[in-house]
Structure formats: C-alpha cells, structure tokens
Length: 254
Image (cartoon, rainbow, N blue to C red; front, side):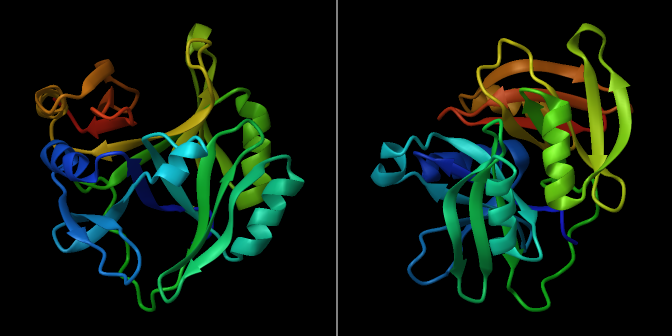
C-alpha cells in the first residue's frame, strides 16, 4: 500500500561489525543479497528479509554520508514522488534509479532536511509483511521535525498520510500519530532544541527492553535515553550503535 514504510536500511562504515552488533541486539541473521554488482547485506528474521545494510563508500562519505538508519516509504510512481518532493520544497539526493527486478527508488529529504527513500518494490508475488509486533520488525517510525505541523502538511500531500491520535507531551509539545490507511504507523513532533537537525528514527521490536538494553551496552553501543514506559504500556530505549547510527528498541514489557 502506498505511504507505508516497508524497508529500513543501515548505512555504516563497518558492515561486518554492525551485522554482529544488530544480530546480538535485535536477533537478526545476516545474508548477502546475491544481487550481481550490488554489495548489499540483508537483515533477516528467520528466512524473511526485513531490512538491509550498505557500506559507506569514500564517495558517499565525501558527500556527507554518515552512519544512519534510513526508511523506505512505498510509492506508486517513484519519479512523480521525486518531482513532488522538489515541488514541496524538499531535495532529491539520489535521482530515481532501479535495481532491475528488485526495486525502483529515490533518496530525498523533506523541506526541513529529514532524509528518507521513496520506492516501489518490483519483486513479483512478494510475501506479505510479518505480523505487527513480531520480534525483529520495525514497530514505529518517528520524525523529529523542526516544525511538525509544516512537516505533516508536506507528508500528507506526498503520501496521503492522515492524523491519528495526538498526545500532549506537556512542555515538549504535541506528539502527533499518523496513519496510512490503517492503524497508526508512526508519529512526529517538533524536536527538542538539543537535537541539532530533523531526522527520522526507527524502533525495532524486541521481546525484552531490559535484555535489549544490556545487549546494546555489551556490544559497545551507547544508551541515549531510557528504558522508559510510553503511552500504551510499551517500553522503549533510545540508543546509538558503536559507529554512530541512532536507533531505538521497543518491547511489550521489561
């Protein structure tokens, strides 16, 4: 369905080390994609690929690429979506391109600078996503915006997202959930001043937040915030991997 996050990708300076780190923390196994001419690693839950990993090349680094997680949002027409991003005041970092028979994609940034991919999968008869909440899948997509209301207007026009519940966070402002034709898939809010730039963040489902937190520490990662309980009774922890990519965990309890 258009407007859904359907893939998440890590770009990193150390694919081998990151593969082991996230394998320990999230429970993924790693596998080469097998696509000729593309050095690309898959993160898998069992036999199902749920995300990917790409090494930051010297050329990418020279253009400012740093370790980070990036999300892919489904689009019916990737080229038109890239044009709409420009028309809406955003930027196109990678023009629409294709891995034949696999995916057509473009890397873009919203008008406030948060980077994401718009893409269309080309694999015929692709399996449906794993059930919501399955360990190893992404449970939440979160935008820390410079101005969440302006950001929402941009994404509403681009992907047809609709507002879901709004949570009053007191002095921190409003935490606005959004949906893409079903239950809420994420939220956005105006970022705290301490965060230097707007960005998308992602929450990986794990069985236990306490166990996940200890695995982050044991693997050399850094805890940025939490663990803490959030509305709805789930627990989250916000962290950074040893190479500088921010990520989060979410669990149904301790």
